[in-house]
Length: 117
Length: 114
Image (cartoon, rainbow over all chains, first blue to last red; front, side, top):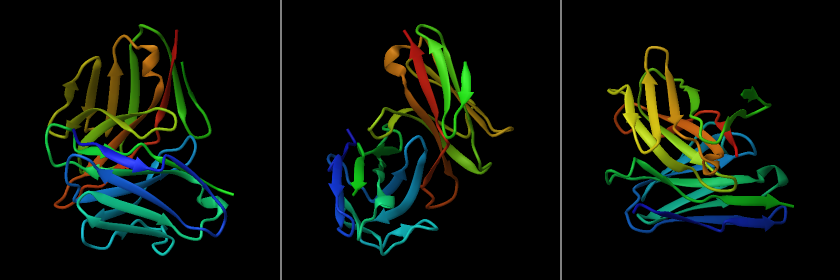
């Protein structure tokens, strides 16, 4: 149980365009979701925390107007990278806090590889 | 042996040997710790967790040890198998009401030699 489905798994887009990444909780309600960014051979860096029905909380240095997060329902959170540039190319991962036990607190999506050309 | 690259330390072990992966966490107020396994191009996969009121927890082939005095966490994998090859991250959660964010460590790449 407690599965998060993340789509797409990879996407290539042109500079200046926007890309939307979706994360759905399949068998539980995700009140809180987290979005991470991961560069090659590096760790996961938290970008923002989203709570259903309210505005996301962004980490320092993350542009909220560039990385739009919507968490309009208990089963869906989206991250939109607006006006993407090559430096936005990265691996983006969503995570949901799981309040059911004994899953282990958090579950992660499979990630989205974004390449901006 | 263990080596440190530009970004990711690497641990190489022989198949069948035990592996020990270490992590130094940052906040003495953290109350929950998790070890994750990440294979290339995939999201992190839960391995084992431990709360700050414990110093050891065992799972299937894995053991996590917590030393709060020196803010150190370790993951022991018994009888390491080729399928264990991956990057391993520790993560900590700060204590406090409403605090649910995880902070990830730098990660260690485990390579199992058949």
